Image 1 (cartoon, rainbow, N blue to C red):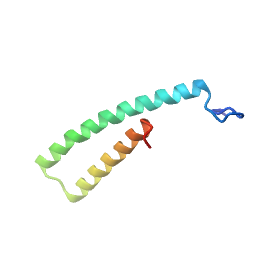
Image 2 (cartoon, helix red, strand yellow; image 1 turned 90 degrees about the vertical axis):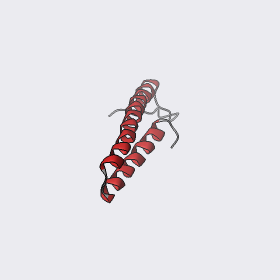
Image 3 (spheres, rainbow, N blue to C red; image 1 turned 180 degrees about the horizontal axis):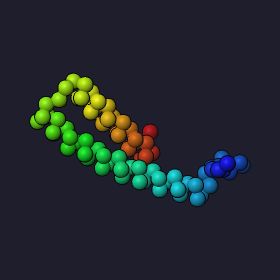
Length: 76
């Protein structure tokens, strides 16, 4: 079993914290790039026309990406 916290302090071990910070940084960069693509799609959806269901799913995707980015940045 992977032990991520010291029993006495409750803090993450330095190596685990470093790996977690690295994972969060990579995830944050992926989310930022995904948000850029979604914004580009916004213009395409307006030009091509979109159904109400498609618009709802598009805005839900934007919401999920925004939350994930803020989570990785430590804002949530």
